[in-house]
Amino acid sequence: MLSNLWKKKTSLIVGIDIGSHAAKAVLISQGADGYLLEAVASEAMPRGAIIDREIQDIEAVGKVIAKLRTNISSSASLAAAAVSGQTVITKVIYMDVALTEQELASQIEIEADSLIPYPLDEVSLDFEPLEVNESDPSKINVLLSAARTESVEARVSALEAGGFTTKVIDVESYAISRSYDLLLAQLPDDASEKVVAMVDVGASMTLFSVTEKGTHLYSRDQLFGGEQYTRSIVSYYNQSFEEAEIAKVANELPPNYTFEVLAPFHTIFVQQIRRAIQMFLTSSGKERIDYLLISGGCAQVEGIEQLLNEELGIHTVIANPFKHMQIAPSVDSEKLAKTAPQFVVAAGLALRSFTPWHI
Image 1 (cartoon, helix red, strand yellow):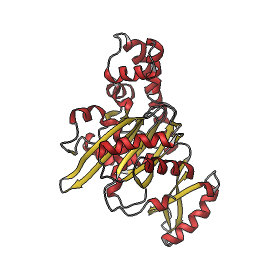
Image 2: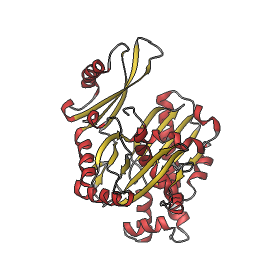
Image 3: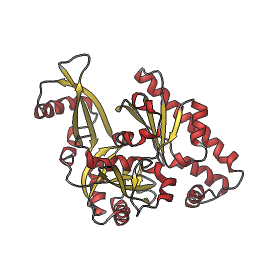
Image 4: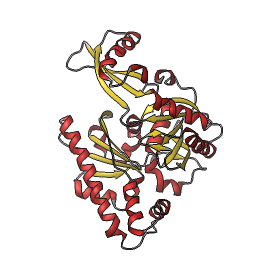
């Protein structure tokens, strides 16, 4: 299924990040002077339509995506979305360097049977040959990606219900890593040679991924997100969840919220990032994280950038994938400046318009 979706691109693809709190869409074109942000849009997702990264109500999600299409461009018909969470598996395996791609495909299906904890008839597979193995030049490193077919098909159905033709179903951690080149200009000049961690904080899940010298090294999901902050507002100030979300975004909270809500959330946030970093260092053997990029809705929580700089001692920047991009006149630049960190995944998906490789 995945292989059928990943074909050569013929026109621009709208990147659509389907989240439990909101769906975000980005359309990017490319000219002689670089990328141009043609359009960007976000629509709230009905509560319960997506739970634990899985679509529960395809019709409801389709209606949200249809609104996005109206706001983006009715002429944009191709879309890319991503799967994520525990049903997605990515592994680097080692295959004979002399195998053709067709031979690799046959051999990988045999290998996958022992690597993937699901029946193969319930799984969509794809692979991408990488570089020749440094330790054994007779082998080539191959990236194997697998996702539950029902997760893939649910996204395809939701996109189709919203009026799109599905061109790509990607893996969320790779969509974030693809935004790496857009974000590098926000970091010091040596960042392209350093270990850079990207932390995307969603409503209920946080994706921690690491890139070194442009190569994706690691990714891991954590059960933590901005809803914890919202629930604290709900409990402290006796508001509904929707009222708390509006107050949080509009900065219309009581003066004492800094001590009652913000400071405790800051503490939990730092703990989560510190734990993610330690798990990466332990598993990878790396000595340190050099730079940290924060994206998602929580990136806009007051004081996050300064907090992480001080508490972790790591150069931290709030990610803005559009900071060094040309912006179309139709895009509200003032609004975009406030919400840009939320669109890192969607921007990475939109860049599939220009990447001929599988993943």
